[in-house]
Image 1 (cartoon, rainbow, N blue to C red):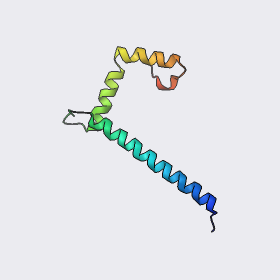
Image 2: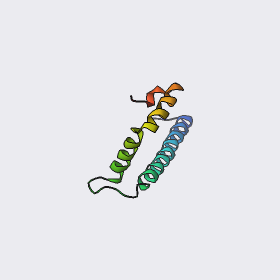
Image 3: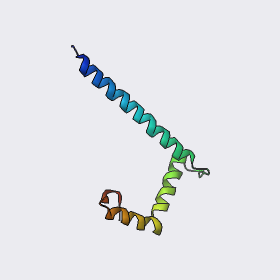
Image 4: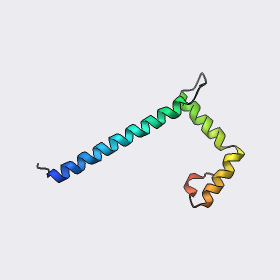
Length: 80
């Protein structure tokens, strides 16, 4: 099976792109997780961060900002 040099370079470029993108998201994820200073005994840092985010989004302040966000046409982010 023969692969043209152009196709090879295209595949290599895409692989490099997705690898860099993956590393970028991994760094952001760890930054977010490590922002949790106090995790609860029965929870991982991930679970604690997730709970903090959900609790905050359920507060009245976030609900109103979510509605304003939805008015801009971005309704896929609002769960009412």
